[in-house]
Length: 102
Image (cartoon, rainbow, N blue to C red):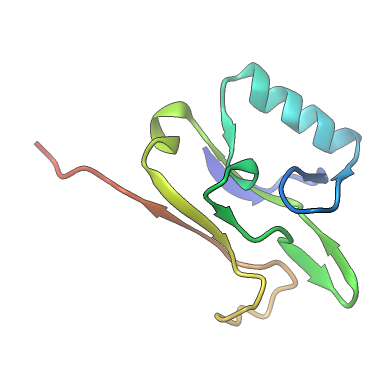
Protein backbone atom coordinates (compact mmCIF):
# COMPACT_ATOMS: atom_id res chain seq x y z
CA UNK A 1 0.00 0.00 0.00
CA UNK A 2 1.18 3.50 -0.51
CA UNK A 3 1.21 6.58 -2.61
CA UNK A 4 4.15 7.59 -4.77
CA UNK A 5 5.26 8.44 -8.28
CA UNK A 6 5.84 5.09 -10.01
CA UNK A 7 6.99 6.59 -13.32
CA UNK A 8 4.20 4.87 -15.25
CA UNK A 9 1.27 6.62 -16.84
CA UNK A 10 -2.07 5.01 -16.16
CA UNK A 11 -5.28 6.98 -15.99
CA UNK A 12 -8.23 4.80 -15.09
CA UNK A 13 -10.52 7.50 -13.78
CA UNK A 14 -11.61 10.60 -15.60
CA UNK A 15 -12.44 11.08 -19.24
CA UNK A 16 -9.04 10.87 -20.96
CA UNK A 17 -7.48 7.43 -21.30
CA UNK A 18 -3.73 7.56 -20.83
CA UNK A 19 -1.41 4.61 -20.55
CA UNK A 20 2.17 3.70 -21.37
CA UNK A 21 4.02 0.40 -21.09
CA UNK A 22 5.18 1.05 -17.51
CA UNK A 23 1.60 1.96 -16.56
CA UNK A 24 0.30 -1.28 -18.06
CA UNK A 25 2.93 -3.32 -16.17
CA UNK A 26 1.99 -1.55 -12.96
CA UNK A 27 -1.72 -2.31 -13.47
CA UNK A 28 -0.90 -5.94 -14.23
CA UNK A 29 1.13 -6.13 -11.00
CA UNK A 30 -1.70 -4.55 -8.98
CA UNK A 31 -4.13 -7.14 -10.34
CA UNK A 32 -1.72 -10.07 -9.83
CA UNK A 33 -1.06 -9.12 -6.20
CA UNK A 34 -4.75 -8.51 -5.37
CA UNK A 35 -4.18 -4.83 -4.60
CA UNK A 36 -6.55 -1.95 -5.37
CA UNK A 37 -5.81 1.19 -7.39
CA UNK A 38 -7.54 3.97 -5.46
CA UNK A 39 -7.53 6.31 -8.46
CA UNK A 40 -10.00 3.99 -10.23
CA UNK A 41 -12.52 3.74 -7.38
CA UNK A 42 -15.80 5.65 -7.19
CA UNK A 43 -14.60 7.24 -3.93
CA UNK A 44 -11.70 8.91 -5.79
CA UNK A 45 -12.39 12.60 -6.46
CA UNK A 46 -10.17 14.19 -9.09
CA UNK A 47 -8.14 12.80 -11.97
CA UNK A 48 -4.92 14.64 -12.75
CA UNK A 49 -2.13 14.26 -10.21
CA UNK A 50 0.47 16.26 -12.18
CA UNK A 51 0.20 19.48 -14.20
CA UNK A 52 2.71 21.71 -15.90
CA UNK A 53 1.25 24.43 -18.08
CA UNK A 54 -1.31 22.75 -20.32
CA UNK A 55 0.15 19.27 -19.81
CA UNK A 56 -1.67 16.93 -17.41
CA UNK A 57 -1.14 13.36 -16.30
CA UNK A 58 -2.23 10.85 -13.67
CA UNK A 59 1.19 9.54 -12.64
CA UNK A 60 0.70 9.43 -8.87
CA UNK A 61 -1.41 6.61 -7.51
CA UNK A 62 -2.87 5.38 -4.26
CA UNK A 63 -2.40 1.60 -4.09
CA UNK A 64 -3.96 -0.31 -1.21
CA UNK A 65 -4.30 -3.83 0.09
CA UNK A 66 -7.76 -5.36 0.51
CA UNK A 67 -7.82 -4.84 4.27
CA UNK A 68 -7.10 -1.11 4.09
CA UNK A 69 -9.30 -0.38 1.07
CA UNK A 70 -12.39 -1.31 3.09
CA UNK A 71 -11.56 1.51 5.52
CA UNK A 72 -11.21 4.27 2.92
CA UNK A 73 -14.22 6.54 2.45
CA UNK A 74 -12.61 8.89 -0.07
CA UNK A 75 -9.45 9.78 -1.91
CA UNK A 76 -9.04 13.38 -3.05
CA UNK A 77 -6.67 14.61 -5.74
CA UNK A 78 -6.21 18.30 -4.92
CA UNK A 79 -6.42 19.57 -8.53
CA UNK A 80 -7.41 23.06 -7.36
CA UNK A 81 -4.32 23.32 -5.14
CA UNK A 82 -6.19 24.61 -2.11
CA UNK A 83 -3.00 23.75 -0.23
CA UNK A 84 0.00 25.14 -2.10
CA UNK A 85 3.02 22.83 -1.99
CA UNK A 86 5.26 24.41 -4.63
CA UNK A 87 5.24 21.13 -6.58
CA UNK A 88 3.84 20.36 -10.03
CA UNK A 89 2.30 17.26 -8.44
CA UNK A 90 -1.08 17.69 -6.76
CA UNK A 91 -1.48 16.58 -3.18
CA UNK A 92 -3.43 13.36 -2.61
CA UNK A 93 -5.25 12.76 0.62
CA UNK A 94 -7.31 9.92 1.96
CA UNK A 95 -10.09 9.59 4.53
CA UNK A 96 -9.32 6.36 6.36
CA UNK A 97 -11.25 4.97 9.31
CA UNK A 98 -8.92 3.44 11.85
CA UNK A 99 -10.59 1.35 14.54
CA UNK A 100 -9.76 2.15 18.16
CA UNK A 101 -7.34 -0.18 19.92
CA UNK A 102 -8.91 -3.07 21.81
